[in-house]
Length: 242
Image 1: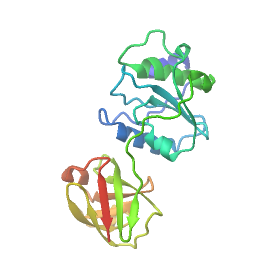
Image 2: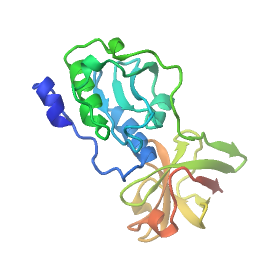
Image 3: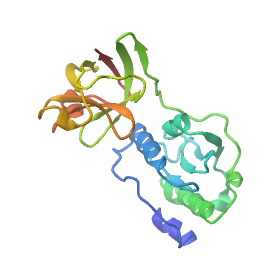
């Protein structure tokens, strides 16, 4: 992929966001992409290749935001978090063969289609020439949190490398006092957690709830792998009571 981009545009600046997304994990790829993209400058072009259906009937799409960031990805739900949380100008299906490699394999569209399109865009090609507007794309079953009294019904949006569980509950949705005792219910188990600002607010192996760097409520076990121990997964429901 990098070789294709640099062959077309030798001056391209290529930044790796991650090569550690679990195989076939569209949900994790979409969340990581969205959270990274927020910090990139205007004009950035993102190529996201988690594509279990490569060579099949799924489309390849280009999404443009109103602040002129461009996202190239398969239409398999990977751009769900981008579409739901950034301001989208338009989405197009990539069809223009002149912007692709001459020979396109059935199993490596990241190299043969997505990378060359990104390279041509970086050289100033008109993004509207990639193909027709799409009115709808495939989206993952991402939910908004709901609060009823002293109970929040949420969803697990991400699990990081440390096993910390990141929810869909944003800062400002609820305000907990320091050291507030919470009851957290997953599909597999329930536990007690203390609300804090950092891991240092609880003892080793104790559970802590805090708003992390993404601005979302996270549940973690200090110096432990909570997600692995409880076998929780992205997309599952989570309930917070106090």
